[in-house]
Length: 97
Image 1 (cartoon, rainbow, N blue to C red):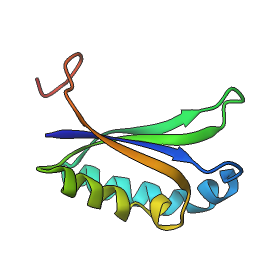
Image 2 (cartoon, rainbow, N blue to C red; image 1 turned 135 degrees about the horizontal axis):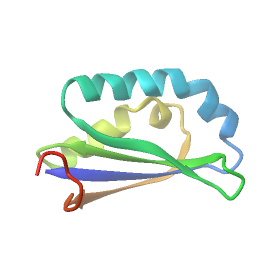
Image 3 (cartoon, one colour; image 1 turned 45 degrees about the horizontal axis):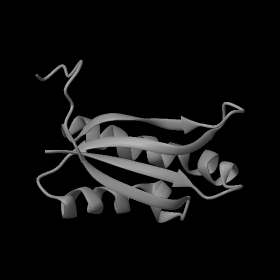
Image 4 (tube, rainbow, N blue to C red; image 1 turned 90 degrees about the vertical axis):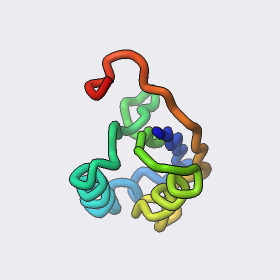
């Protein structure tokens, strides 16, 4: 099953995001290598700067998806104001369909 992790950065946390990005990318690269990561990228504000993240992962349960979200270095350093996790059905342009 797929889950969308909808993450919103805390206001004024751009530098924290930038400082933590190498660890975050390494984490996502590991998930990708294990076949867990499907899609990832930042949400952008009107100024073109990141304001949050969309990460879509494959997990068996909501609890597993939550654990993946909590293990993200961005989450560990407190970057996010909130994280919503929703089951997701990838219908169009899914390369695995």
